[in-house]
Length: 598
Image (cartoon, rainbow, N blue to C red; front, side, top):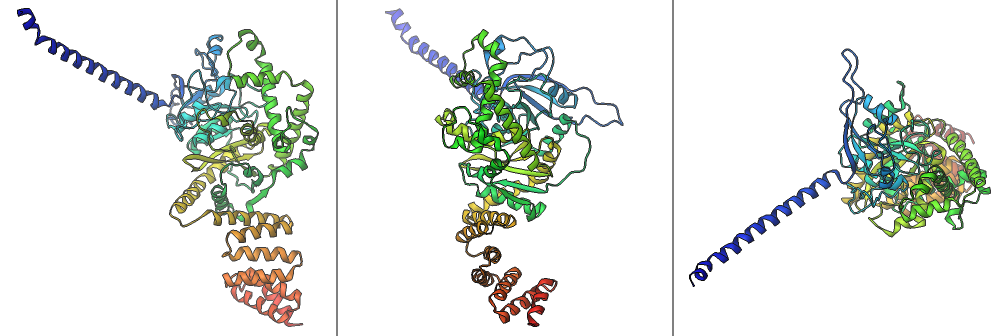
């Protein structure tokens, strides 16, 4: 009884102590879990290995400091670093290869230039895809849109820059491996001209398409790094002579292009003048300048989109990619038999069905297309296209496996990959809480010019994108006005090309969207005059004058129309009024004087 009675108060006490200990243990586990989660979030799952490659000591004064001093960078896990195994996004590759005996040339150049390398980053499996997912090492979290893919193949490198973990990073761009993640993560991505940078010490994926690529948040940083890697001597910064907007490429874009177009058009007019803008239907350009495309039927090209010139280029690029990858890594694939992503396996199986004769035809098309685009851009011109055709897809989305998604994406990406031109991805605003971007393309070898153009336009582009975004939120501006201005610019281009009827169509579209703009009516009147449709021209000018009593061009054009219609008195009054509004206008004064003598 005593023992029983004496143990009675002790049992609850023991249970209480156990509960306290259990509670403390659970609290500790929860705390540790939170710390671990915080640690994962801090680097967004971007790194496969952290390390430090320190730059050499600074030279003694009065010599200048290293050009990249105080900058940090990361490299995709396709670049060799002495003493470390290059994993290439697949554990079987890492386990069957030794540590590198030498550091990749581009990495050594950056370190010698004063930058510090802090780690190697995740890439897609064998750096093959453009999605940014990796089932072996985990998919890096997209800082700009956490529920969506970061884009690949250089996913981790893009994420480190987007998360501001480093100042810049290195990736590999074969069929979009830098441009796509730059667009999806909202950072600047630069694919240099083919052959501009050494690939020594970098995994070979497709030798005729591979380039080292760069990510940065700051165009000044990108320019500094680019100058070091490209070994560019000092030169005078050149302005673009023309900014060519590929209108049909933007029609592939899954989101409204109006805001991006307006930011681009306004920035170009502000910096270089309206005459610098040009609109191009790129499908027509390719049909006229790459005739060999008509003779080539790409592998499995039976869908309607695949028979377009852009679709054909997409398939040619994809065929070269898988054919070259399969040939280069054939021995390793057969010997090691790695477990590959089913999509990659299917592509490599398809590669076996492509004949050497077909590949030669594709290379012939590529050479012709390279010559055509470089001729188009040779005199300091910039081609503008959307970087990707859609917003970043959601993680594990079926869209990533869609043939349509790949075809449309590759259609845009193939232009620089096949032509060898340099391309820079420029983040520009957002849509549906996801980054949006445009890309500038310059001729092969025009890397300095492209980086200079980016630097000169970047701040203005961002300013205009911000103005448009805030004005939309406050209700001061809407898409119809922006769309109208885009239509007007297309009309102006058609007018310059002497395509009068096409110009009238665009101006009519602008008027339907915004019928309170005098310029649209006046410009349409100019096109009507070229077609000798004088009654229509007179009516449009009268409407323009009703909207803007000081529109000198409207008075001049109405005077011209009235003169041809035989209304000499009214025509004289129009020319005289134009002369009053603009006393230095010699045409107005001369026309009025000529009619006075009749």
